[in-house]
Image (tube, rainbow, N blue to C red; front, side, top):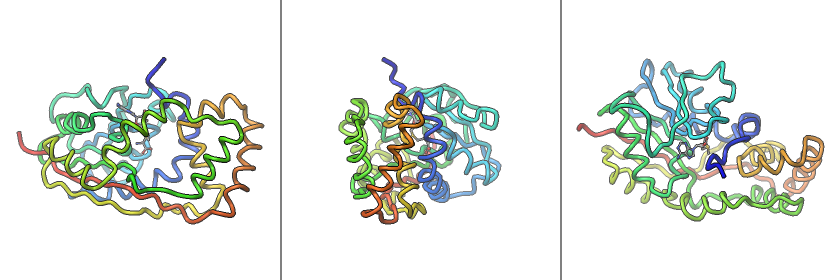
Length: 261
Ligand SMILES: C[S@@+](CC[C@H](N)C(=O)[O-])C[C@H]1O[C@@H](n2cnc3c(N)ncnc32)[C@H](O)[C@@H]1O
C-alpha cells in the first residue's frame, strides 16, 4: 500500500480544508524575522500550495516539495516549480533556498528532528525556517461532533490516521517540545509561540467543509459518491449547529534561523 495518504485528497483540501489552513499560513509567514520579498522560499509539505500562495502574494519566489504527487499537481498550471520529495531526504543541494516554510508537515514525522535538520540543510545559513503544527491542547467540541456524526454515518477512522495521531503528531505538540526539537536540529534564534488562531470559521457549514476536506475523509467520501456525500454533509451541519462556536485551533509556531556552517 502507498504511504501517500493524501492521494485523492487535493480537491477536498482546496475547496474545504483551506478555509482553516490559509489563515494559519498567513500567520505563519508573518512570523518571519525578515522580509521574504524577492527571496527563494521552499514550501515543504506544500500540499495544494496554500503557503506558496501567501508567499507569492508577498513577492517571494516559492518552490514546492511534497511527498504526494496528487496534492502537488492540484491546479498545476498556476503552481510554482514543484517536485515530489520526502522531507527526510530532500532533492536539493545544501543552502539551495533562502528560507523555508513548513506548514503542518513536521507533525507527520516520527523523527521530526531529522526532518527539521534536513530542511535546515537545504536552507541558506542566516535564512529563516518557519514551521507550524497543531498543539496537543487544541480541541473543539464542534469538530468532535462532526467526527462522531460521521462515524454514525459509517465513516471509519483510517488506520494511517490513528497511527499518525499516536506516533507522530504529539511529538511537537507543545512549545517546549518544538523548541527542543528545533535546537537539536541545529537552528538558532529559536522563537516558539503556542496560541489560538481566529481562522474566521463561525458557521457550521464552514466547519463541516473544513473537516470533510481533510485527507482522513477523502477515501470514504469518494466511495459514497457526490449525492450521498452531500446528504451526509447536510446532516452533519445540523448535528453541529447546537454546539457550534467560532473555531479557534491552537497552533505551535516555530520561527528560527539556520545557523552558519
Ligand atoms: C496537513 S497537509 C498540509 C499541506 C499544506 N502545507 C497546507 O498547509 O495546506 C500535510 C502535507 O504534508 C505532506 N507530507 C506528509 N509527510 C511528508 C513527508 N514525509 N515528506 C514530504 N511531504 C509530506 C502531505 O502529502 C501533505 O500534502
